[in-house]
Length: 507
Ligand code: UN1
Image (cartoon, rainbow, N blue to C red; front, side):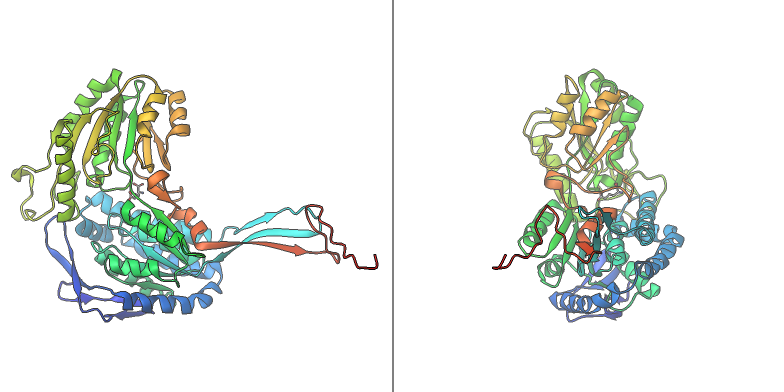
């Protein structure tokens, strides 16, 4: 890829410039350097992509699961062989440190492996009927055209969460990658082209929120799969929810907690808590609240703060880096605003690396979007905005609690969100109480609350979730269930004791 080219959309098996005259650039957030230039999609390109996705649906649906999965297996091998190279592209485009860049690609091929492997597994259910001569089944059918809108923070894994299952199940796809990571989008589209997937089955339109909205609003879209911010996700869910026959599965952010009880192994607790800063806090599952029992609070605080004050922020391509940059200038403003807000809300600031020491910034990276860790302690019961609103950055609160695990879980559940959370304890009763009462979709014991594997359900409760646009759960969003009952008798017999006798006036 060279910066002189302008990259296009992929529609109906062709690279299409489209009617839009605007272009946009992909930028390396660690250096500010332009990586490549892309066409900005408009409603016209979305319209073209949806028309062809609708037209090719019947042909794609009529292939066997196994045949559809064959195209995905090609992509699986390519992703797997190119993990290191693509991991570097992920890191250059979204700023995650290099082990995370590679893990993103690995998560993508795990997802493709799951979806394509699932093609050879039983589909649907065999169900017993009340009537011995009837066979009853649940059979699945693809819904049709699936619109996928994906975020920049997992620019390879999340597109495959959505698309691998949607395609293997027999749907066609129109995908809009995040505007911050179009280069990853370009490479994924090239992989579909190389795999020889039939024209029109997979389509990609590059662009911004207006192109995404054109996908969401169009009546030809049967299912919208969305992963991203809560604001946009709620808009998508409520728009789509109002349209009969259309479905949305949205996965959104969180204000995630780690509970450290008085029976915690503090080595595990501190280690798990420092992982809040992985991806510079820009995972929807990153923890921003640490709820720590008063008996271990001081020791935990001292050890945690000592490490956070020293974590290595810098060039994400350098293996000794722990935290890369934030994604873009607007996000630096947002995180800085929240750090300032915390100060105005009179919390006790323990680490403030909002502005990095200039000496920390590696040479050639002066234009990067740097923000280091920010840690503070606050009252667990105070209705502060900084401890309740999602920052999506390296902004972490320590909240002290006294009493039992019930109290810890009460503090834990006191946010509008419910995506991921963890409990650190050596006491299985505390762990089980947390497991059964924490309001989250992804719960962990003695672990950080990041790093979910693709064959687990991924989604949240409360403001964090609406459907599960990942892995096996995507099947629910992209298929219809048919209850299919076959009578093997010459008589018609009804369930529920319903009479099938036909009675005439003479009876
Ligand atoms: C996200 O946080 O936006 O569980 C996705 C994890 C990853 C996916 C995170 N497998 O940390």
